[in-house]
Length: 318
Ligand code: C5P
Image 1 (spheres, protein in one colour):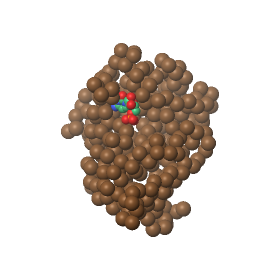
Image 2 (cartoon, rainbow, N blue to C red):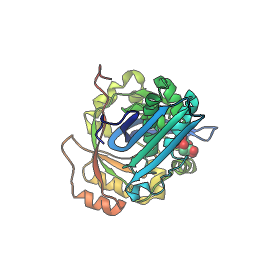
Image 3 (cartoon, rainbow, N blue to C red):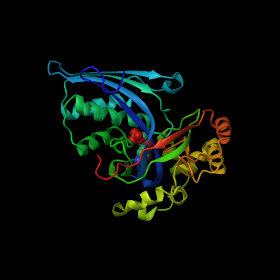
Image 4 (cartoon, rainbow, N blue to C red):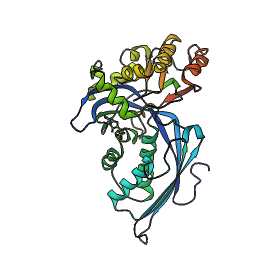
């Protein structure tokens, strides 16, 4: 289906994956979650959702259905039932806005699950945006963020579709200015659960990395923009506190990071709770030693791919 040529009440949208430019874990909270500071960058790697939905007062309740499509390698383990975050999100929004009607959703997976790339969370964020529209819920951005936070910690930061600074357990989101960046993304033939990664951080002594200082000051987000134009300056500032705990349990993650850095990437970072890692390109249009792609495939069991992270919209553009 060509975007924009869908039948009435139908919308086809991309649900971008993300990487975390940096991720600080500040501490475990009484509710078992962890307080974070992280910058989330949407990628041009995305799942695709086709949503056919309408409000219909003649329905006594609501009817939600989900079909999961895609390469069996990617869809294995992705639930097609009410535990999928797409359905959790649709249900949460319907509940919040008192919707009676239906939604039939087809999810085409392209983003590996349990990879630290926010695949399921991105799908949930896209579902909320589209259904808010098709169901005519009329929720404001901040009301949608509140529903997103109920669905999962990563969902609020993925709602805007542009770089975001997230705090709290992920639900306190503000825009941040980061230019478009290019990466070599390495995914693995195994997954890591977010819950495990945070548990390992606790077990290993709860180490919080350096404070990116000025970058975290909301009044000075321009500093991040400036550093972003110089990947080597940016490299000095990026860090993921979950990287050491995950690498300890999965040495292949550490090996892939070494290969990326050895090939000339100013920095290699683990994405979210892992295991995916990404190497930053030294300069846009200047790939590093490409022979590393074969070695990375040997380590990860997957072909690495070149991706771009979305930049912030220039001032004045939505
Ligand atoms: O919010 P979400 O369901 O995605 O989180 C999955 C699990 O990851 C949580 O149950 C929790 O164990 C862990 N987590 C955490 N702190 C966060 C986000 C997630 O401890 N900020």
